[in-house]
View 1 (cartoon, helix red, strand yellow):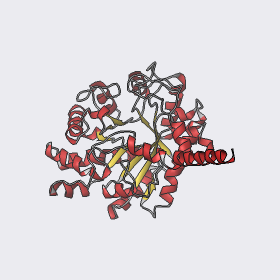
View 2: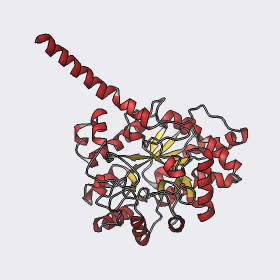
View 3: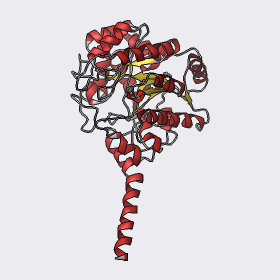
View 4: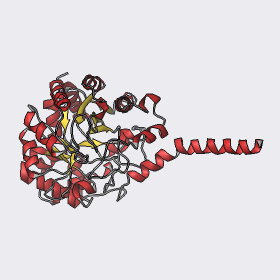
Length: 388
């Protein structure tokens, strides 16, 4: 009997070790593959141009996974060493807090969650196990801690002054990265308007309204009802704009997009998306929405994964960019990779030179490429972030 108990105890210990120390890395690697691993090469012209660009990307979910941003990994799509190798100048890091089981693009309820198990397996603090707000705050803490330990190579920007200072330093030494903190949906508000202030105080400066399910703010493109803004959602949008937080319409239902566009007094953006004109899909933007978002002064980030461009490769990414530029002008188009978002992408962040080369081959001029690859995002942040 004693030997049996010892054996059971040993199995429990081994099982716990696998759950906490092996499973998260395996899940990460399986869910965030790179279809064409590096190293990547491009023409001399593209390589020289790319090294001179202020490259900005509007969406990465790396904070969800059990990785140290400051360390280089052979899984996933981005970390600071690879971002600097890219080279990339600015990355928006989104916080993922809830994801329905059986996730799909068409119809998801809000009554299940697959993130809770991942949170526990990755040994996040117990306060995050049952609170979506705490999950968002904890991921923000991870980003701020990485910045503190980066030796000045990673800077979290929260204001116009932060952004101005970073750009000035970047021109002197491009081996540095600005990070902007964002949410993947506003279910972390947990239905309380005062939690907008808690997120703001924690450094969040961009907020998606919904993710894969309808929430207290409004409908998702993938939800059950797919409705517009709720009365609470209208209060939230107003508060966000008063505080200078950028509103991200990625994953939003069409009625939510319409409602926000009808009430906004500031530019809005879509951090990671595709366009219906090249890849039909429930969350990709119609021509009308492209034009109305551009009319606010906002930008649209074109993604790299199959849901955004149908076939995840450079020609289709460039095709979507060309379509959007033709519809709304070059000043309103940007990059929105969805790196590390449980997506398969054609390259990791070290392969961004392939996009630069693809744009050159498609006939874009150097000023146009500078705008698309990051200049438009830089301009938007310098104009719309809180002054200090």
